[in-house]
Length: 477
Image (cartoon, rainbow, N blue to C red; front, side, top):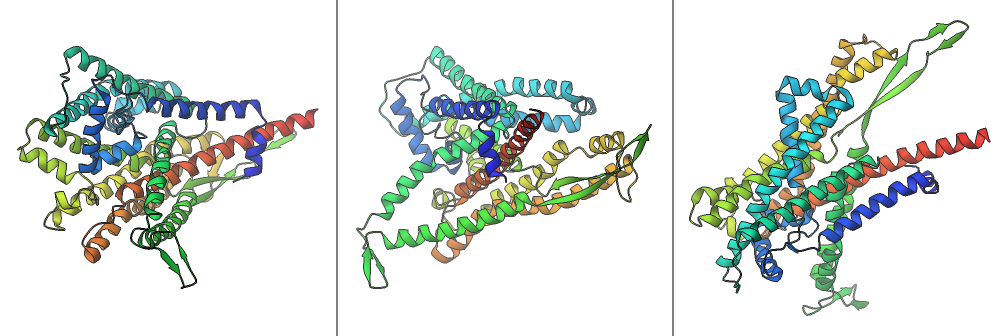
């Protein structure tokens, strides 16, 4: 990364404007997270939400990616989940229906149409999820015997669902605005901001536990006493070391790439000759970035949501209880409730399905963003070729083989990294009898590191372009 170039590019008005727009969007996003849903007494529903967060690890993840929107019962409670689900559905249909695949390859016009259909599908999905969330929360207040005299009318339901749907659509619009600024993927950036916004609360909780000396203080080799809880101190120290190691490998995997040399044929036009040069085509090991993890989590959230709706309507329904149990990530919050008999075969269902989805979505999303046929055609039009490979179809086949090999290792690496928290929980269950509860923090760390690297790379590329233009202008002057 060229950090000096990045700081120098901030002197450029265009670059500074782009950065300020993105920061302004993130600030507006955080303000939206504080606007409550217009449904009766907000404090009553917040109490129901807190009870739900204690029982459901799935709800904790929704609260994480919505930037606390669930805990505060805000209008962005639904978040970006409908847009992500809509994107998955449209992209699957694009691969399944030849006419849609042809439209997606029809340049910018085709992509705009597909994006428009994704937006249109987002609205009904947001409406359905808004109704489901409000219904679950309202029924939770009743089942928990929370004191409330509020009975929602049809107008209350309509107003609340409209507000939550509008919040989801606004987030979708904000994400697209960030993407248009050319500094990273907007949807990933908003999820990144959501996770980072929870860090102050997490740090405050850790700090309170660290400086709670009711169980004693930490002795430093008998020389002096530190006013910290010794158990919490060593847990935090171990977490910090493990986090640094994981971040190191994440950075290495994210930056790994295969470089293919491209030769350009020499052409003679009159007295001038063109071409005869070499270039490179870098192919990232994990070209899909963090999108497979986000897609897999969003995809797995739907059965858990359906299960919660069914059990809310009919508390004794075994099918709803099974859906909720199977598709809830095993963690310290729900382990004793969902698995009273200890680890069983059912405990491995969620991690296994999660790994398969991450693996599959890595291949799927890479095939969308890295079109080997299109790249081969462009190289042929520009007179470029790979040494030892014929232009055209053979080049596309060669690139396809290279990408598939990289995807195999990249998908396995991404899936194994996503499995690390579950493996840690398994080890702690065998040794201490209880999981450590890193499932959510591990997923969040994976998203934060990957999105930060992608956005930093986008900023670096734009900074290089801007400073190059400024340098050219200086030469002309």
